[in-house]
Length: 617
Ligand code: SF4
Image (cartoon, rainbow, N blue to C red; front, side, top):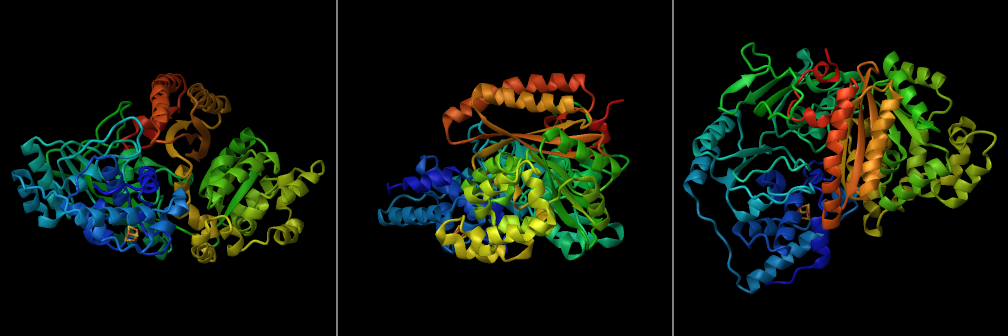
């Protein structure tokens, strides 16, 4: 057996399955083999899994494994793509995979060529010979994700349909053969939901988008990602309420109902679409708006299966104006920030809206984990910032926010801070800011227009300065990247959500989402304290994520995150002990307080009306 490279093995095991290598979010182009072959096996994410599978002895060398290794051109595109969000550089793994295969061929090792059985023959009859596989290497890339509470689950087949009719035929066949099946969007669910020991349907080939501007909607097939749809909407001067960039639009709506900072104005769940088309469990096609269809707009407070396989979503499009800008409003206390965000929601000021803690702000702004850690510490210690309210607003909204808030970081100041970040966190500069304490709060000083020349002189913000934070080999790429205006534009970044994937950079993230009434600060604190208490009991890294008001500030969605190294059995054990404590506590809270609901119950009911789970009558 050829040697395994330990560094490559460690990197491969850390793949977060965020699928950011499957969308061209940095305009670098995509891994060349991915869009041609479509199986995740032929994207960097799949090759990371292949190397891990070989290293752990979970898969043999197969025909598809050789092909996946051979079709990697070592172009290096996956390095910046992966580094931007995770800090990793996967090309070393790709090289190790190719080296392994080369050595294996030299040693004349056996290559597994799985035979076509009857089920596979029938699947291929439906989708075509290239789009169904039982190759163990292919199956392995659909068998696992970083979810710490379940082990790998190998499917027997993976199939990539290309139309609603093919999906319907595959479902009927699966029923006939008694094969369980799971539907995969783009990455993995990172919650262990997209696995099956039968059949996995990957929607990667179904990527059509049709705009119907007269009806303010786009018909979207199930392989289309949020990033891709947002890009197309932007080209037409429009916007969608977007999920995580690499998440598929249909998958996201069905699973949790899309929510984002834009949910302040665009809502969530059924607010986001005009209609949805499904293939039901019996293989029949139905639309949600048909009178005869089952009522998936209703909500039941229990964990339910999805309505079926979504084959098309008619997603709402929203108009955008050309005077929108992002603002950050810093606050010395969390409660002040929540009150402010709620008031903006109540008064309908601004569009996207969220309360962010220091952890999110630091992670979003920093292209490097060490820099992020320094900024996170500096925000409260040196700048006096405990939380920030992020808002996108037009010029009228911005005027109102400026009148309401003592200090505002506008888009031009944010650009200076982002591009000068390595200097902003230098002790020399932070001491200087601290010296002003007493006269004004440090962050108020930073936001003063007359301080702008000083900030600029000290930080020397530029693409070169921010690039100092990343490894030498990637600096030329980052210099070019940060010279692009959208990389420091809060509106663009927030619409395309490319920096939010950085949340898992330090460790795999376990996100808990809870709906809550933001006027009840006591309840908000009970939720935050509860998550913190359980995390501390079990020694789990944890932090507040964000809070976004909904429905005129009457409700909010709150995220609290646990962080763990999913490759470390001790860390997996910690989360396994913590989970049984969280569920009953959240259920009790939800029973006691109207408006509190764990997103866990909305799962698979993302097509329901938000009123049906945010309110009780
Ligand atoms: S180095 Fe290989 S895996 Fe990475 S993007 Fe290029 S071809 Fe794809």
